[in-house]
Image (cartoon, rainbow, N blue to C red; front, side, top):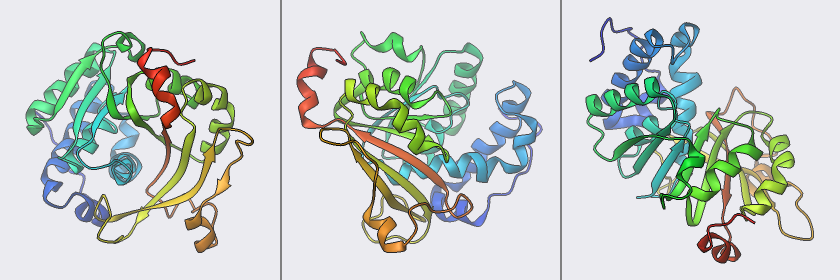
Length: 269
Protein backbone atom coordinates (compact mmCIF):
# COMPACT_ATOMS: atom_id res chain seq x y z
CA UNK A 1 0.00 0.00 0.00
CA UNK A 2 1.23 3.47 -0.89
CA UNK A 3 1.53 5.92 2.00
CA UNK A 4 2.02 9.71 2.02
CA UNK A 5 0.95 9.96 -1.59
CA UNK A 6 2.76 12.63 -3.56
CA UNK A 7 0.31 14.39 -5.87
CA UNK A 8 1.89 14.60 -9.31
CA UNK A 9 -0.74 15.55 -11.88
CA UNK A 10 -0.61 13.74 -15.23
CA UNK A 11 0.08 15.99 -18.24
CA UNK A 12 -2.42 16.14 -21.12
CA UNK A 13 -0.42 13.67 -23.22
CA UNK A 14 -0.66 11.06 -20.45
CA UNK A 15 -4.43 11.47 -20.40
CA UNK A 16 -4.52 10.88 -24.15
CA UNK A 17 -2.07 7.98 -24.22
CA UNK A 18 -3.36 5.98 -21.25
CA UNK A 19 -7.06 6.63 -21.84
CA UNK A 20 -9.11 4.27 -19.69
CA UNK A 21 -5.94 3.03 -18.01
CA UNK A 22 -5.05 6.47 -16.67
CA UNK A 23 -6.11 5.70 -13.10
CA UNK A 24 -3.66 2.78 -13.03
CA UNK A 25 -0.91 4.98 -14.46
CA UNK A 26 -1.56 7.61 -11.78
CA UNK A 27 -1.51 4.92 -9.09
CA UNK A 28 1.83 3.66 -10.40
CA UNK A 29 3.26 7.18 -10.35
CA UNK A 30 2.16 7.44 -6.72
CA UNK A 31 4.16 4.28 -5.99
CA UNK A 32 7.21 5.69 -7.75
CA UNK A 33 7.08 9.05 -6.00
CA UNK A 34 6.50 7.65 -2.50
CA UNK A 35 7.69 4.09 -1.84
CA UNK A 36 10.00 4.29 -4.86
CA UNK A 37 11.77 7.32 -3.41
CA UNK A 38 11.75 5.98 0.15
CA UNK A 39 13.38 2.70 -0.94
CA UNK A 40 16.01 4.38 -3.10
CA UNK A 41 14.61 3.22 -6.44
CA UNK A 42 13.77 6.73 -7.66
CA UNK A 43 15.84 9.84 -6.99
CA UNK A 44 14.01 12.62 -5.11
CA UNK A 45 14.87 15.09 -7.87
CA UNK A 46 13.01 12.90 -10.39
CA UNK A 47 9.61 13.34 -8.72
CA UNK A 48 8.71 16.61 -10.46
CA UNK A 49 9.59 15.19 -13.88
CA UNK A 50 8.39 11.63 -13.32
CA UNK A 51 5.74 11.78 -16.04
CA UNK A 52 7.67 13.43 -18.88
CA UNK A 53 11.15 12.06 -18.29
CA UNK A 54 10.22 8.55 -17.21
CA UNK A 55 6.63 7.35 -17.63
CA UNK A 56 5.87 8.95 -21.01
CA UNK A 57 9.36 8.11 -22.26
CA UNK A 58 8.71 4.45 -21.42
CA UNK A 59 5.24 4.37 -22.95
CA UNK A 60 6.88 5.41 -26.21
CA UNK A 61 8.07 1.82 -26.62
CA UNK A 62 4.44 0.67 -26.78
CA UNK A 63 4.14 2.36 -30.18
CA UNK A 64 6.43 -0.24 -31.77
CA UNK A 65 5.39 -3.45 -29.95
CA UNK A 66 2.96 -5.64 -31.95
CA UNK A 67 -0.46 -6.63 -30.58
CA UNK A 68 -0.77 -9.55 -28.13
CA UNK A 69 3.01 -9.87 -27.84
CA UNK A 70 4.89 -11.48 -24.99
CA UNK A 71 7.46 -9.12 -23.47
CA UNK A 72 10.50 -9.64 -21.25
CA UNK A 73 11.73 -6.46 -19.59
CA UNK A 74 15.43 -6.87 -18.74
CA UNK A 75 16.73 -4.97 -15.72
CA UNK A 76 13.27 -3.67 -14.91
CA UNK A 77 14.36 -1.71 -11.82
CA UNK A 78 11.29 0.14 -10.55
CA UNK A 79 9.26 -1.11 -13.51
CA UNK A 80 10.49 1.20 -16.25
CA UNK A 81 9.48 0.38 -18.92
CA UNK A 82 7.82 -2.99 -18.09
CA UNK A 83 5.08 -1.82 -15.73
CA UNK A 84 4.32 1.21 -17.90
CA UNK A 85 3.91 -1.05 -20.95
CA UNK A 86 1.63 -3.41 -19.05
CA UNK A 87 -0.60 -0.49 -18.04
CA UNK A 88 -0.73 1.17 -21.45
CA UNK A 89 -1.06 -2.11 -23.34
CA UNK A 90 -3.19 -4.63 -21.40
CA UNK A 91 -2.96 -6.97 -24.40
CA UNK A 92 0.68 -7.72 -23.55
CA UNK A 93 2.07 -10.53 -21.38
CA UNK A 94 4.98 -8.97 -19.50
CA UNK A 95 7.76 -10.62 -17.48
CA UNK A 96 9.83 -8.27 -15.33
CA UNK A 97 13.43 -9.45 -14.84
CA UNK A 98 15.37 -7.88 -11.99
CA UNK A 99 18.25 -9.25 -9.90
CA UNK A 100 17.97 -7.11 -6.74
CA UNK A 101 15.64 -8.28 -3.95
CA UNK A 102 14.48 -4.83 -2.88
CA UNK A 103 13.49 -4.07 -6.45
CA UNK A 104 11.63 -7.35 -7.05
CA UNK A 105 9.83 -6.84 -3.74
CA UNK A 106 8.73 -3.39 -4.88
CA UNK A 107 7.68 -4.72 -8.29
CA UNK A 108 5.65 -7.56 -6.79
CA UNK A 109 3.83 -5.14 -4.49
CA UNK A 110 3.07 -2.78 -7.38
CA UNK A 111 1.83 -5.57 -9.65
CA UNK A 112 -0.46 -6.89 -6.91
CA UNK A 113 -1.79 -3.44 -5.99
CA UNK A 114 -2.54 -2.52 -9.60
CA UNK A 115 -4.07 -5.91 -10.38
CA UNK A 116 -1.80 -6.51 -13.38
CA UNK A 117 -2.76 -10.15 -13.93
CA UNK A 118 -0.67 -10.55 -17.08
CA UNK A 119 2.57 -9.43 -15.40
CA UNK A 120 5.04 -11.71 -13.61
CA UNK A 121 8.18 -10.82 -11.65
CA UNK A 122 11.36 -12.90 -11.65
CA UNK A 123 14.43 -12.33 -9.54
CA UNK A 124 17.25 -13.27 -11.90
CA UNK A 125 20.11 -11.87 -13.89
CA UNK A 126 19.30 -12.00 -17.58
CA UNK A 127 22.29 -14.23 -18.30
CA UNK A 128 21.02 -16.79 -15.78
CA UNK A 129 17.92 -17.40 -17.89
CA UNK A 130 19.65 -18.73 -21.00
CA UNK A 131 19.19 -22.37 -19.99
CA UNK A 132 15.61 -22.03 -18.73
CA UNK A 133 13.85 -21.87 -22.08
CA UNK A 134 12.27 -18.53 -21.21
CA UNK A 135 11.68 -16.45 -24.33
CA UNK A 136 9.40 -13.71 -25.63
CA UNK A 137 8.39 -11.96 -28.83
CA UNK A 138 9.94 -8.73 -27.55
CA UNK A 139 12.74 -7.97 -25.09
CA UNK A 140 12.74 -4.43 -23.74
CA UNK A 141 15.34 -2.44 -21.81
CA UNK A 142 15.91 1.11 -20.62
CA UNK A 143 19.08 2.52 -19.05
CA UNK A 144 20.41 -0.99 -18.38
CA UNK A 145 23.68 -1.21 -20.31
CA UNK A 146 25.44 -0.06 -23.50
CA UNK A 147 24.04 -1.66 -26.62
CA UNK A 148 26.84 -4.19 -27.12
CA UNK A 149 26.41 -5.64 -23.63
CA UNK A 150 22.63 -5.45 -23.76
CA UNK A 151 22.55 -7.52 -26.95
CA UNK A 152 24.44 -10.33 -25.22
CA UNK A 153 21.89 -10.42 -22.41
CA UNK A 154 18.75 -9.97 -24.50
CA UNK A 155 19.33 -12.05 -27.63
CA UNK A 156 19.12 -15.48 -25.93
CA UNK A 157 15.66 -14.51 -24.60
CA UNK A 158 14.18 -13.68 -28.02
CA UNK A 159 11.73 -16.03 -29.71
CA UNK A 160 11.92 -16.72 -33.44
CA UNK A 161 11.71 -13.45 -35.35
CA UNK A 162 11.71 -11.65 -31.99
CA UNK A 163 12.63 -8.00 -31.54
CA UNK A 164 14.91 -6.18 -29.14
CA UNK A 165 13.30 -2.84 -28.25
CA UNK A 166 15.76 -0.54 -26.46
CA UNK A 167 14.92 2.96 -25.24
CA UNK A 168 17.97 5.11 -25.90
CA UNK A 169 19.11 8.72 -26.01
CA UNK A 170 20.81 10.91 -28.58
CA UNK A 171 23.86 8.60 -28.73
CA UNK A 172 21.77 5.73 -30.14
CA UNK A 173 23.41 5.67 -33.58
CA UNK A 174 26.90 5.71 -32.05
CA UNK A 175 25.93 2.87 -29.69
CA UNK A 176 24.80 0.75 -32.63
CA UNK A 177 28.08 1.42 -34.43
CA UNK A 178 29.96 0.09 -31.42
CA UNK A 179 27.63 -2.89 -31.05
CA UNK A 180 27.74 -4.17 -34.63
CA UNK A 181 29.92 -7.22 -33.84
CA UNK A 182 27.52 -8.24 -31.05
CA UNK A 183 24.48 -7.63 -33.24
CA UNK A 184 25.93 -9.76 -36.04
CA UNK A 185 26.77 -12.60 -33.64
CA UNK A 186 23.18 -12.50 -32.37
CA UNK A 187 21.90 -12.24 -35.97
CA UNK A 188 19.90 -9.16 -35.07
CA UNK A 189 20.59 -7.76 -38.49
CA UNK A 190 17.42 -5.81 -39.26
CA UNK A 191 17.49 -2.56 -37.30
CA UNK A 192 15.37 0.59 -37.14
CA UNK A 193 15.73 3.90 -35.33
CA UNK A 194 12.29 5.14 -34.29
CA UNK A 195 11.39 8.57 -32.96
CA UNK A 196 8.08 8.46 -31.09
CA UNK A 197 6.22 11.78 -31.07
CA UNK A 198 2.80 12.96 -29.91
CA UNK A 199 0.13 12.69 -32.58
CA UNK A 200 -3.11 11.10 -33.69
CA UNK A 201 -1.55 8.61 -36.07
CA UNK A 202 -3.96 6.61 -38.25
CA UNK A 203 -6.35 3.73 -37.74
CA UNK A 204 -3.43 1.31 -37.71
CA UNK A 205 -1.57 3.05 -34.88
CA UNK A 206 -0.48 0.69 -32.10
CA UNK A 207 -0.77 3.31 -29.37
CA UNK A 208 -3.34 6.10 -29.25
CA UNK A 209 -1.78 9.54 -28.94
CA UNK A 210 1.62 8.51 -30.26
CA UNK A 211 3.14 8.25 -33.73
CA UNK A 212 6.23 6.20 -34.56
CA UNK A 213 8.44 7.92 -37.16
CA UNK A 214 11.19 5.83 -38.70
CA UNK A 215 14.34 7.93 -38.74
CA UNK A 216 16.52 5.34 -40.39
CA UNK A 217 17.57 1.72 -40.51
CA UNK A 218 20.49 -0.65 -40.64
CA UNK A 219 21.00 -3.84 -42.60
CA UNK A 220 23.97 -5.49 -40.97
CA UNK A 221 24.45 -8.00 -43.75
CA UNK A 222 26.97 -7.46 -46.56
CA UNK A 223 27.94 -5.36 -48.35
CA UNK A 224 27.32 -2.52 -45.90
CA UNK A 225 26.07 -1.83 -42.41
CA UNK A 226 25.69 1.92 -42.82
CA UNK A 227 22.85 3.84 -41.22
CA UNK A 228 20.38 4.85 -43.95
CA UNK A 229 17.85 7.64 -43.26
CA UNK A 230 14.28 6.38 -43.35
CA UNK A 231 11.36 7.45 -45.50
CA UNK A 232 9.74 9.37 -42.65
CA UNK A 233 12.94 11.33 -42.12
CA UNK A 234 13.18 12.18 -45.81
CA UNK A 235 9.55 13.27 -46.04
CA UNK A 236 9.73 15.49 -42.99
CA UNK A 237 13.10 16.88 -43.99
CA UNK A 238 14.39 16.08 -40.49
CA UNK A 239 16.74 13.15 -40.08
CA UNK A 240 16.68 13.77 -36.34
CA UNK A 241 13.53 14.95 -34.59
CA UNK A 242 14.61 17.23 -31.78
CA UNK A 243 14.76 15.91 -28.24
CA UNK A 244 12.19 18.51 -27.19
CA UNK A 245 9.68 17.28 -29.78
CA UNK A 246 9.92 13.54 -29.18
CA UNK A 247 8.53 11.33 -26.45
CA UNK A 248 11.12 8.59 -26.94
CA UNK A 249 13.93 7.38 -29.16
CA UNK A 250 13.76 3.63 -29.71
CA UNK A 251 16.11 1.10 -31.28
CA UNK A 252 14.33 -1.95 -32.71
CA UNK A 253 16.43 -4.89 -33.89
CA UNK A 254 14.78 -8.00 -35.31
CA UNK A 255 16.07 -11.51 -35.82
CA UNK A 256 16.12 -12.31 -39.51
CA UNK A 257 14.99 -15.64 -40.97
CA UNK A 258 18.57 -16.84 -41.33
CA UNK A 259 18.98 -16.74 -37.55
CA UNK A 260 16.66 -19.65 -36.83
CA UNK A 261 19.21 -22.46 -37.05
CA UNK A 262 21.53 -20.60 -34.68
CA UNK A 263 18.72 -19.96 -32.22
CA UNK A 264 17.54 -23.58 -32.14
CA UNK A 265 21.04 -24.66 -31.23
CA UNK A 266 21.03 -22.19 -28.35
CA UNK A 267 24.04 -20.32 -29.69
CA UNK A 268 24.71 -16.75 -30.62
CA UNK A 269 27.57 -17.37 -32.98
